[in-house]
Amino acid sequence: MKTLPVAAIAALLFAAPAFAQNQAGINAPKYGFAVVDVNYVFKNHPQFREKLEGMQGEVQQIEQQLKGKAQGLMTLEQKRNSFKPGSDEFKKADEELATGKASFELEKNRLQKGFLEKEAKAYYEAYGQVQAEINRYAKHYKIGIVFRFNGEEPDPAIRQQILAGINKPVQYQDSVDITPDIIAMVKASYPAKNPSKTSVANPTAGNSGQY
Image: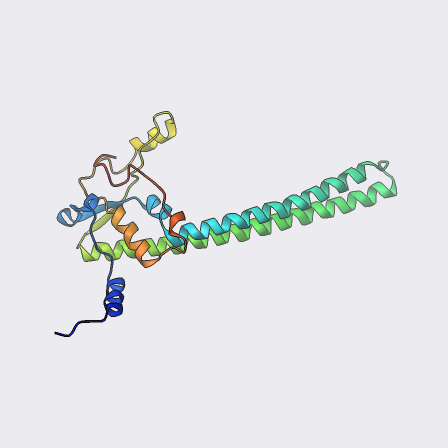
C-alpha cells in the first residue's frame, strides 16, 4: 500500500474546510437553524484585529500631526494679540491666522475622512470573510437559517445594557450557538501574523443556553 508523504498529508489537512463541530452548536444541524455572535467573531478575527491595531498607530500619528499644527496656530494667535488692534501688523497676523485655521480644518477633515474610509474597508472585508464562513458552515450542515445574537451578559449596574438584554431577539438557545465553530473557521482561513494578540476572552459566549 502506497502512503502519501507527510508534506502531502499536511497540505490536504490544511486545505480541508474546518468543519469540526463545537458542543455549543451541536444541535444546530438537528433543528436546522443556528445563532452566531457576530460581534464576538469580529473580536477574534485575526486579520481584522491586526488591521485595527495597525490603524491605532495611524490615529496616533494623525493626532500628533494635528497637535503640532494646532500649537503653531496658538503661537500665531498670541503673536497677533501682541499687536495693537487695527494696526497693519495686527491685520496681517489676523489674516495669516484665519488662513492657517482654514487650512487646519481642511487638513483635519481630510485625515479623518481617509481614516474612516480605511476603517470602513476593514470592517467590510472582515464582514465578507465572516459571512462566507457562516454560509459555508450552514450549507455543510444543511442549516436553513442563522440568526444573529449577542451572547454577552449585560452589566446589572448599566441600565442601557439591561434594556438591550431585554430586547434581544434571541432569549434562549439549545446548543445551536455556532460562534466557536465560525471563529475556528475564520482563524483557519485567515491566520494571524501574531496569534497571541488576536484572542479576546468572553466567558459567556457559547457556554450558556440562556441569553
